[in-house]
Image 1: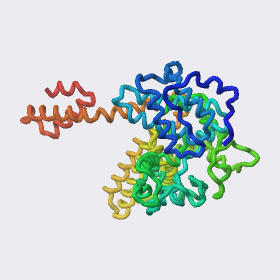
Image 2: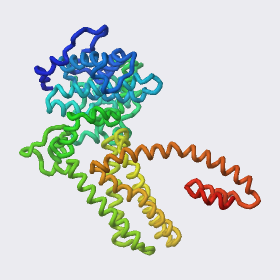
Image 3: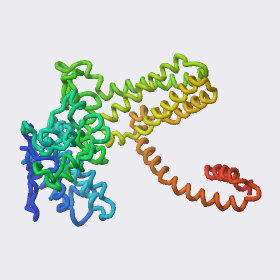
Image 4: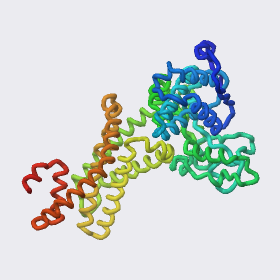
Length: 470
């Protein structure tokens, strides 16, 4: 790791006075568990009496203790896990910030503040390394956590390196980016791999528990963890936004070639040495291909609905099957690569799974209808296909969300959707109460089925209908 360039900047954050508690010293090769523990203990002591906002941290007395921590990290530590550890703590404090009078929320802000200020005191190349290097899985007696489920123990590898090296072929073999490991968000049970009762194990009970909690973040980088932790203030800072923009435009790449021997490593794009085909991984280009694919998918969908061949499969329908299979493969592979914990952060993931599920149901019922020569099953299959529009058409918003205006509406739509589902149980309870009352009052004139349908209309806004029937 290159040395920090702080000659002109550390003077502004140097401690003016000693605090009654000790600032932690984090070694360069210290494990993630120890880094998280030290920073967690410091945050508990630094902010222990009064809650404050992110903006108040700059001027409050707590800001002085945070600047001391920042001075220590910038001056004495080059550990690559620092930003990731701070974002993990942000996630932990946010989950615990309910009945603590806002202290844990303030500690989460403190983690964001320290991470932001730390990035402001290192150069651009080091910023990329701190933000985009993935957390490696700790070795456990020569094998990692995944392999350790077979019953081995110990943290050090035979080579003495605490972490595994990851390449293009590695996900299929050992690393935390393996399909199953990343699919479940890196949250495998590690009880057998961290067996503290094993005489050969050097893992304490606290380390085993902490490592199991942190295992969900293995294979993710600090930027992804910040997204999971909803560290919006950290992500909105200019130094972080610059990295995100460079990733989007392809100035920062993770793969320098499409070869199976290439290794995933964040770096600046070099036109002289990089493989031209590796530009296919650039997000802005991938989004363009995604838009073209989606428009063609939408065209095939409407073509099949209009064509509607009950006795056979036409050309458009055949092509739509290929498109559905390609869409499903891309979605499942993306889920396995990102991990469930990070995948679920995408608002459109639920819509994509709806598209895949409805398409799969259509294909199955369509094949059964053709095999049995059943007109009824064939009609049902096309009825199922018509439901695809409920997921496919709103998906257009994912393309227009690249515009700043429409993009700002997506979080609003997301919160409205959450509020709608939270309000449904209340509506159901009220509906059942009204249904019971009016069914008994109108038992001589209306059946339960008729009254149920009338109340559905009333609950959806046909208030005048209720007065007419009364």
